[in-house]
Every structure is written in C-alpha cells, then in structure tokens.
Image (cartoon, rainbow, N blue to C red; front, side, top):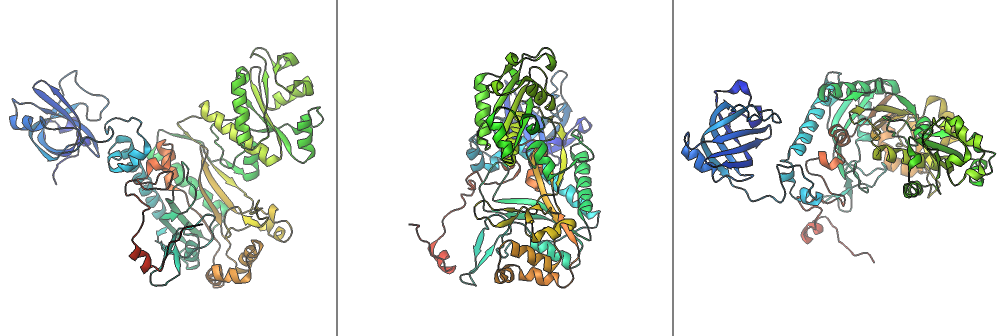
Length: 598
C-alpha cells in the first residue's frame, strides 16, 4: 500500500516511529520557512511539518501543495512543541516531521469548501457528491450506517436468523404505492416490477420452513418525495415463524436498546419502550407517531362546553365530534400576530379555526382568574367556571395559553397533534439526547377509501386480524383491529410490521372485502394462496427503515444526508444525471414507442 498508517490513527505512542501517509491536503499554512499541512484521510487529520533544514526536497514539494491535492508523505512522528497542541483533534498532541513528499494527483479548486461545514446549495452538493462525501459530517454518517448494519447482522445471526436475498425483478402487486416497471426484452409487452418490499417472498420463505429470515433489502416506490422518503431505500427486512405479536416486539426492543447502548452510549432512552394503542396515540397526541420527549397532551373538553353558549362548540359535539385542547406553557404573552400564525397553522392541518385563551399575566393561581384577565375572543360565550375547568383539565397555570379546536374527532386530533409537534420543534421542548422509542399497536385493519368508498387495508392485505375481531369482518370491518404494530422514535415512524395471514380461506375473504374478483385474486395472488394450502406456519415480521434510523441516530434532517448517492426532491440523481433519455434502438429492442400526451 502507499501508506503504512492512517492519518487519524496516530497518537503519542507512535512518537519516534517512521510512517508513510497518503491522503488529501485539508489545509496548508506557510509560516515563512516552515510549511504545515493538515493531511486528511478517512480516519481523520494529522499535522505534517515541512522544515527545509531537515528535508529541503520535501519542503520544496510542499510549497506546491494546494487544497485537495492527493499527496504522499514519509516522516517521523514527533510530539508537538509545548503550547502548540490542538485539543480539538485526536491527533492534536503529535505531528509528522516530513522527510519525503510527493504529489500523487493535483486537484482543481472545489466548487465548495471541503474542510468547513458551511451551508451549500443541496443540488450543488448532490452534483459533486464525491466531494461532499469527503466532508467530515458526511463521512461520519456513512461510517455510522456501516456500524448499524453490521450490528444488525451480528445481532440476528446470534439469534438464529439466516440472511437470504430475494429478487429485484419481480411481479407488479398492489403494495400501497406505484411500482417502478421494467420492460422485458425477451417477453415483449410484459413487465417486471422493482419490489416495494419483499413482502410476499419473505412469507413464502416461512412456508418453505426457513423459520427465521432477514436481509438488508433494497426497496423501490414511485411516490412523491419528502425529507424522509427516497425512490429507493433500504430496510432491515425480517420474518419469523411460530410467533405472535409479543415475540416480535421483544426482539425489536432488544435490538434497538442494545444497538443504541453499543453505538451511541451517550444517548438516553425510555425503557421499557412504552406501548400505545393506535386509538390512545391519536386521542392523546393527535398522531400515530408522537414525539414522547415532551408532554402537551390533548385533552377532551367536550363535557365541559357541551352546554355552553358558543355555537361552534355545541354543534361539533351534537354532530358526534369533539372539542379538545392543548396547553402552551407561558403562551399567554403571545402577540396577536403569533396567535394569527397559530390559527393559520391549524387551518393547514384541516381545522376551520382555532380558539386561543391566554390566562392572565402569569401571577397568582387559577382560583384568582377573572373573565377580564382571560385574553380570548370567545369569553362572552363561556362562563368563568367553564374556562377554569378547561384550564385545570389541561394542567394549565396562570400565564399559559390554551389552544382549542372543535370539529369531527379525526380532524381535531390531527390539528392539535400537528400544532403540538410544530410547537415542540419551535420551542425546543424535546431533549436532543433522548431516544423516546415506543410501540403503536392495535391499528384498524381496514378503512374506507375517501374517493371510492371501497374498503382498503391500513397496513397491507396480508395482515392478520386480531382473533377476537375476526367475526366482525362480515358486519363491521372498520371495527376490526389488526395484529399490526409500528415502532416509533422522536416523532418518526421507523417501521411497520404485522403478524401475517397464513390461512388461504381467510386471505381470500380479505381480498374479496377489498373488492377483488375471484379472477383478479387468482391472477395476482394465486401463487400465495396455493402456497398457504401446503401448510403455512403462523408467522410475522417487521422491516425497520435503515435510512430513517441513521437519520435519527446522526441528527440529520433528511435521509439524503445518510445515503451515499441519493436523489434530490425531484427524484433526480444529479451526479449521474438520471433519469435520462435512451436511444431509439434501445426502445425498439424493448418494443416500446414513446408518444406525447394530448
């Protein structure tokens, strides 16, 4: 190799040792005779000193060094002179006294600073991703990703799982998002699909008797992008036979607690992981992925205001909806502009409006509250005792702000949940050193599609109903709870999973409820139903999203920060300029002709 040591590994125990280093020039400093460079490789940075009295030829070579030049240096590790140590660097107590130096490759001036963590337009970073990945933060993200994946493999291997690869070219099936289609040259007019997940394949592996499977699976979904979505992503896909919900949750909690303790020991966790039903999560937090690092829980105020003179509250309740609120500590001092902004936020989340109530100036107790001390546009419609009772239920104090929404229960929950999350972010209510993992369980199995009115599955069509609810499939499918579960952390959903249907008859019944004809069932799922008829064990699994986990662990704000070569928000790979047109002869081979939409 062109180097004997990595730059970042050198320490005081290497003093006196002859070393050969190779890497990139991070910085160059000319001190009028002495030249110093910070030499960088993947392991870190070390200072190299060039003294013409010790090695003139090396000094002359260093005089030509510039930022991002690739160079090789030979020299002796020495202790830095007293007072020149750099405590910010792991190598800060030593330096390398250069004896020889050579330029392996010069470099043009980069389009942005590599050695400074400054804001750079993301599209520029993605175009020059190979330069962006030289930056310390990006390098650390990829190293963390490697460690997480290695930990997952070792953890599952120790528990009897085997890693099995499943096909990338497969059949198009309904999974909840649009498929990426791949035309077949040898089967004209037919298409493969890239897998949205290996869902059916891992279930067939359970039918095959392999019992414990996992893979680091590449998945593809043609859907609108956002900060935590990409057209292609990676998940830890796992499946187990002869298990029920509890077995999966215990395994996942063990995986995440041991992984954080090993890789991020400085982080805190809530243990054991809380378990919330879907109904409880929506009712208390207005979200099925709540951030549990702070309170501000939703409270139902319907019984307090049911007979008030405020028509908006009365109508919401009489129409089967609810009046609920949250308490913003110290928010009574908010300006009119701030309150109007909160109201606009509430409307974006779906509410028709927002009732705000500022409780005095912050002094005294609620017992001393009077109507003229309440800052709100609806005080004339409410009795003082009703306001006090709402404040008590929301655990409010003098100086706090009540945020109240009325309407159908779903909209009320989602609006207050959105406000809670937004205020938590703005006010930095969450402990940044805390990982608040939790499980959300007992999701509904089905819901009505708002546009078509047809039943659709909340998770996917292979999800097992809870045993005690199966009889409701014939009469009230919307009341059937699923044996499904999510693992969440700090406001993010990290994974969804479920116990699967392993009985052909029950699976066919679910397909028919979803509106599939017998012919469609056989065409799309016949292979699954036939496999189940040969003796399928009870089985279930989950698939944590690796990109999202690394984003959370690294503190990044987008999964693009933890993927080596991601697409931008328009699903374009700027490094390789993809997607791009193809030649006419390529289309002809695939029996494809492009046409313009009219």
